[in-house]
Length: 416
Image (cartoon, rainbow, N blue to C red; front, top):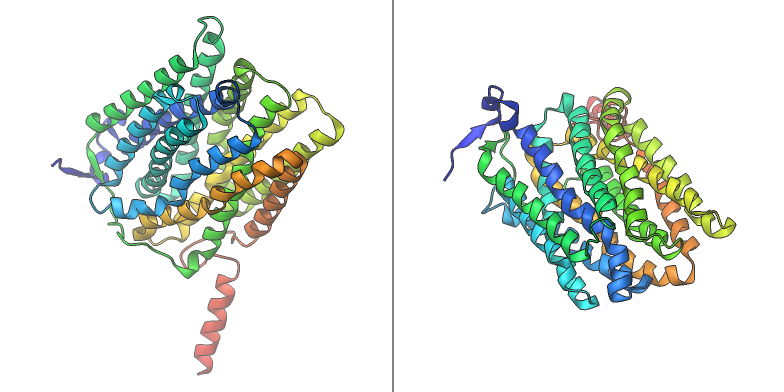
């Protein structure tokens, strides 16, 4: 068994052996597979499996089931440390991505997608927990912003290689899926053997944690998951179905999107530190409301693909502000609650994600405008929830009502 290294002992290590660099490496490994899968999926399922909105909706519903079961991470952590689990899940994601093209059928893609989704969602659950445990509160927005930029850069690299080499080398779907999966596996193995096992200063609860004072965090996670699913499932699918984008064109759009994210993510981290989570979340949700309304307008005014592509980039830009929810929770949480609450929150985030894609797949056939109108309504509700976040969240100041309730309780005690 490897000796645990306290975080306090890592300050003297070279940067390439520190916890933050490990987080950066893992942040790069995940999107190499996931971004490649996302770039090729819509063209692959239409060309190889003849998918319509119904099948793509069911595929994404199955993909979200492991997210709904993310609370199971708590049980796994009884026998595996979070750092080890993160690496194992990256390997599973890489393997599933590598073999995707071998199963060009509805049933086969459901199975492979389920495996890759287990890797993706369980990795993301423990990764979020590790970030909040390993990074100090006072610098968390800036550091998480830089880690997000690394992930966006890895996605950009994957997309760039696809755009440049797809026709030039006459690549097949199998070649690209296989290469991306193997690269993720290689990085994950390096992470497993090149770094010490780091011990966070606060031991984590190993049972499920549901606390009343975290209610706003839970509700925002639910709305975030519901809203994001509509974008993930149908925005890129629309670009292929409505505008006929091929692999190179769609991947080029993804490249532009992640280039913008890579450049802006560190700045967003600084904005969150300067202006606070409340203001940044309000800006995010107001922007998303406008973007989703504009998506619906694409079907009313017959705008061309340039407008749709611009909206896609803007959508991702606003989504990149979402890690303000993480730093909000870090500020209000008991440090021992971070790991179990990350698992619970991931499950809450995916409750709507399990039934929305399949259900909305049928609605999509009838009216794509209605799908995007629903997304706009969800973004508006999220903005109203963000108004409940206090300017300076903390333990005991979780919502704008917290200090008011505390003052009432103190007044009642004085009156006794």
